[in-house]
Length: 106
Image (cartoon, rainbow, N blue to C red; front, side, top):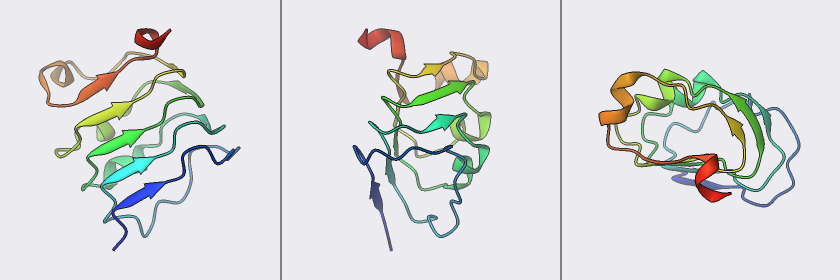
């Protein structure tokens, strides 16, 4: 079973709303330093084994879906250097995730 999907620095230029079927065993979703655009899809929230999501240095925008924020095993959500807004459920601020905001790296 695939546990780490690392497509970092592959110059992928497409909407992030890709088909995630078959990725149910993935723990680390590493998609930084590409050209993904659009919003973070709710479907990522169905990947219940995720521990790390790295999406830094893309062209993402909008809010972070609650489905993603409610992933129980998620420990890292790396979003620096995007246009992501800091809007998420208030419960998230008491949660266990190490959150990396875009403005902390500028």
